Length: 257
Image 1 (tube, rainbow, N blue to C red):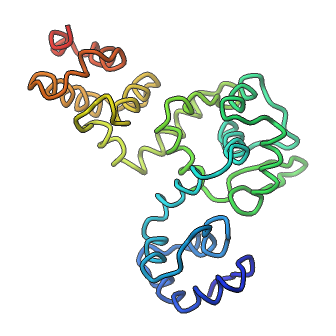
Image 2 (image 1 turned 90 degrees about the vertical axis):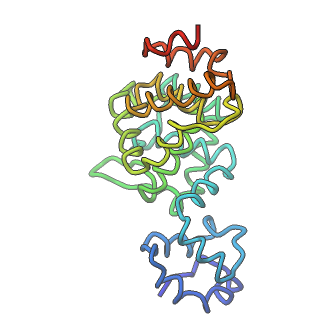
């Protein structure tokens, strides 16, 4: 059922009794089989009926965790592809803004290229189109997972799109939110302790980028304003990012002074 040649014999022996259950899982897709067959995705995976079920059920979350656990060079490799909108021409020539982005990721062109070679066939792939070779993500879900990490990190959102094409970059982010509307819902209703919850920084950054839909922006404003009015959390009165977001709504200005 699954091609497990990349996996060591110990893994193949341990997982074999559970393969049928994995294939019958309601969330099983062909990409799941490929990941199970690749050691990059199963590193540290404890072979048990429950954990394998979670491997299939929570594939998006687990993929994000895998990407978060990569070394700096591997993250730089994925960033290079992201900055070129999933088509990184080879040989690679970087723009100054892209070199600066790699430096923020604690890497450089040499480290990124070396990581691309190592990740080829697992997270990325080298393809040829007529006379041009180019790198892209092995599967679209990898690009989605990387994009989700970026929108949760205001610093990493500063990665420059290819040739300054912010329209393409914005469209890519909007497609991600279309597929994951729950993320925007969480942003719109952050919990108490606003200074600590990540949804606040994400809401402010999305607002700055023009990626926060007006309906969610208004819900966010209502939530943090109600916290302030009730005396539960006054952080909205202090944070400049929140104040700039609220300033677009005159009825709330009196709350923040």
